Length: 151
Image (cartoon, rainbow, N blue to C red; front, side, top):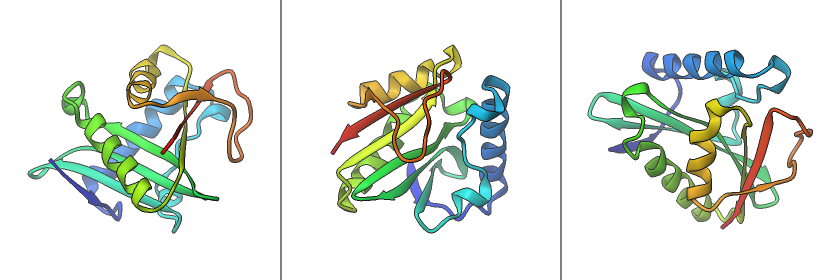
């Protein structure tokens, strides 16, 4: 598997992000969807990676620099074919290592409370994330779980 910084211009990546947003809006009320769209992911304080096996896209993930040595995981997604094969764990470990190299000391994230998000919550827990309060500009929301990890 190869992980690379991605400029979000490829059709496969755009399709994966479209599926991601479609699932978020199908699963959560619109006001509780915190997934970023393509233009939001192209901001200078966000690094977006994709993970590939040859020419096959397996997934994506991003790290948003929040300032004060803190970051936020965004847009973690694997393709249907890549699920339950360790792709997300591999990419998450890579993102956490990148955060450490960039001198970040805390990484947080928001995910959903619904059953659809149970695999994501399990992934993050397995990698040392713990539930926490709100962070950045998030508000308490019955459909959100906030997690963080000190690096």
